[in-house]
Image (cartoon, rainbow, N blue to C red; front, side, top):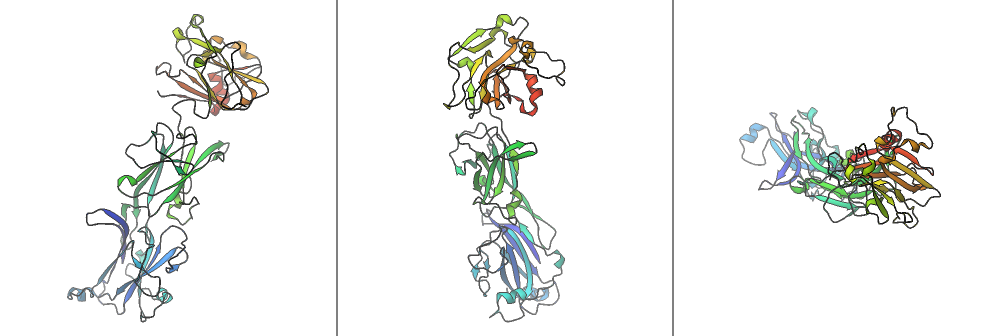
Length: 498
């Protein structure tokens, strides 16, 4: 006996479904004495079943179908007889729509639970009593025939193989895009940045029974499964799920051929934008938002499949407040070309246009979108520099922090370098990048400074610096290399691609 997974097509060669072809052959010299039947035990690999159609089952996951074989004649008798009823071979296709058993009769009820995927075990049995009043229990207890290749008769499995990947751009060849926010599909938009998860149907290797040749083909998903996208936050022991971020849930189904062979899932935040600068992961669940049972074919994808984060194309993301002194109404500009007698900082390289922007005396500080939040003052911001910060409540004390180019203070040995009180006297103010006047509630928060906004100049590219705000009432002073040394992984820098 052989059980071979295969694709079934229509008359035009178009794929219809997958299933199993079962071939039973009498290779002996004697015809069988009694009529035989196949006992097909079928598990959809979708976990426990409700069995609302009252099919016969073993346990709560395995359906049982009986297929009439009859007498199998030896090859000699079969060869000399033209009758279709006298044959040494019987071929049965176990496919969607296969008839099955819901009563004691055989081959009467459409076996609608057959999906074309899952796992089957086939047993060849012999009838030892009249079939007119045989019961399910009688058939289960019927003797099993010893096959010449009985050692090869195992389960045959047909299940889809999925590949999860992530990136920061859409793949033009995939038109099956799902933009989703908080478990609701939203209208698509031009995707310029943000995380994209891709799930793709791949070739599966399905084992045959009775022969050694496996079958390689793309297996269609019989029904939808779900996905969950969660945000992660880093701790001292690794990444854990961020409970403050609302998980996104949805469902999908992939089919071989055409644009349904892959799907791109684009998470969308509450502002209607793709998600940037957030570590997200994706994993499989069921279509109702519940965990998959361990016996489900897709349970191997129930743990985190891939985690990814995408940088924003700008330094200041939408969730942050932004101060750009060069465009502030209350700013005044002071050219400083005349004091840069020995050249400009390397990060600016703009002696002829070097300018400091400061808040006008008596002018209003930068307000916030939140009326109860902290206001901000500024001084000596270089041209093309912005400061981005989270919304925080008003504090009780001012907190000043000044950022400098490395040229402002030459440090011989960063490894042994330590900060001291009132060390502002050691910094050359000509190489100030930004002096920020905040409040103590901003201390300990992640902030960002952008330099050379809009620049595509190779020698002075637009660059984003991310670090932890660390100010004081007296004022604290840091070069970029000091921040990198003192803040470790909390300090980040990256060039912005224009």
